[in-house]
Length: 520
Image (cartoon, rainbow, N blue to C red; front, side):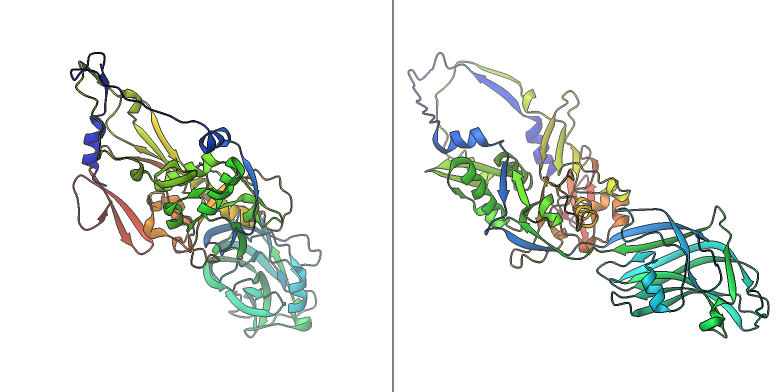
């Protein structure tokens, strides 16, 4: 983007008023015939009327395989309400809160005394269920408890304790067991006292598995079984600073959503507005990877519908592609805006008597609003999400307060899309305020079941928002033309550069061109 050129043209905008009452060249007549009616009249009448569309045979099916969302869930370990505190058990964990989309897959676990793995799995007292892909899980822990021998049981010099995570798949089979920490195994009475466990532990959570945090008795380094397993009583101190925290990533299961290619949707809207499918557009066909869907469809609701109008549809793609439109021979043509203007063949109206020049204040702006609608999914990281509205400070104009708004009316916030897929998955009610919202997705048109990231075309850099960057693994994204939330001031810079380094993009503002980055 050669900003100085744009800036020079922008600052010279002016209104010119011409006086044609006395033409030096004598009589001159120009006839202009503006024809109203037909397609234009019908389209104008219904351009803002929402049309309720079913997903018909022209719709496509898109596989949304989600994205890895970094999560954090914090718990308070307690004794729970178990009347008999002897024996191996699930650690009671009261959920305190989380980050990102409601600490997805995390839940409260109550203390449960189990006898074997079948009994443990049947209890369903797991603290987390891993998403559709394996996840590196980090446990931060700092809590205390007291171990005491059961009545009539002699002290055992080989006794010890073990805190571990046991993973079960959907069949109830143990997939993996990870030892968090062994303790109390240094001698005759080392176990039967107060203990404070503190540290971090990282392990791999297997896709789809339920995770159980358990405390057990060991004898000679082996987990005790049978009656020996009930030889110790665990009493948790419940101090205010006790906690367990899990840092992990979560990917929701793949779901199929219905969507429309843009040109197909344009023709459906035309059919319902002017009575025929009469839209031609090479540019919409070129950018058919940007498809349109709805909140209903993202949720997978049976009989999902799409409600939109021609103005919103046009503005949504205009925000991305800078469109122009004209009607010729009964056809609506949507084109690149540069194709509908040409100064190659000007009409000579003759010399004028007077010219009055004034500043074109109604065309001057000091801010440009770009991107997508603002969204807040009421989750911690969701408040920091990108693909919202971005404000660009457009120049040195200070005496004019006016915005140029090219914000798409269709949503593209990946947090909001994932929030719909995750939090409303399987629910059949249709009272969510996002059910009728329209969204765009970026797909591979050669394989419309596969959604993929399009970071190499990022319109603005999402890493401008560090809080959002910390919450996402960007190689998994599936949205078009990313925009950061916030304000960018271009006033003191001439060039906008972009440094492309794997998934980490960096927007650079420079006073002069730099060939080490791509300048657009």
